[in-house]
Image (tube, rainbow, N blue to C red):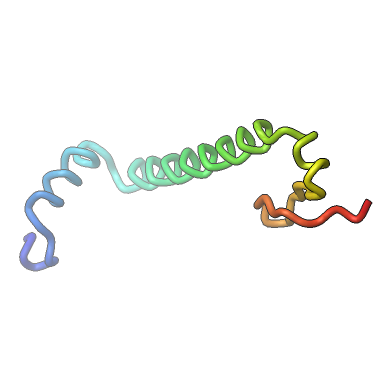
Length: 80
């Protein structure tokens, strides 16, 4: 079976251990939860970086943090 689908035995056994007792819908739910968890961890990391950035340091250097529509931090010169 592994040769037919070009899989290593290690991959097959890892998948079997992870998804062995699940039906298809449960495996899809698990995959979706893992994806959502990864996304939330990224957002938390971004927020913690934003909080750590001292606001007075930004104003002294003439740069300000702006949030784009894609929720990614970018540096832009301040106009004041």
